[in-house]
Picture 1 (cartoon, rainbow, N blue to C red):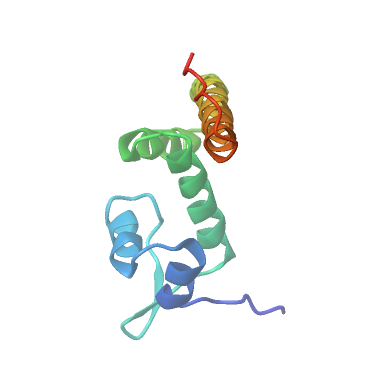
Picture 2: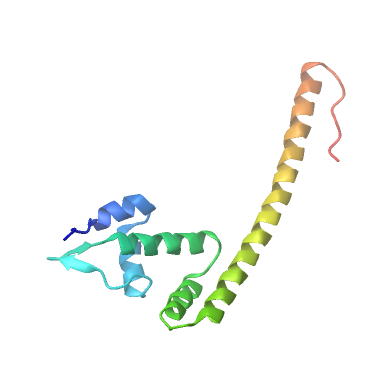
Length: 133
C-alpha cells in the first residue's frame, strides 16, 4: 500500500504564499475540508493542495470568497452541471473582460514609453520636445 505524501501548514503556507492563519480560516469557513491532525498539528495531502490551487485560481480571476464557497457547495450536489457550468462560463467571461482591459492598459503604457523615449532623445539632441497626443 502506497503511503500518501503529507505536508505541514508551514509547507503549504510557503508553497501558496499564504499566511498559516489564512489556511486555518479557509478550513473554518469550509473552503478546505476539515484537515487531518497528527496530535495538534494539521496534516495536508495532495487533495488539499489541489483545492488550494483551485481557490487561488478563482481568487486571482476575481471571484469572491462567497462565490468560491458557493461553487464548492454546488460541486457537492450530484449532477449539478448547469449551475457549475454557468458559474465557470461567467468567470471565463469576466476573465476575457479583464484581458481586454489589460490590453487597453498595455497600449496606454506603450504610448507613454514611446513618448518618454522620444522626449529623452529630444533632450539629448537639443530638439523640440514631442507633444503628448
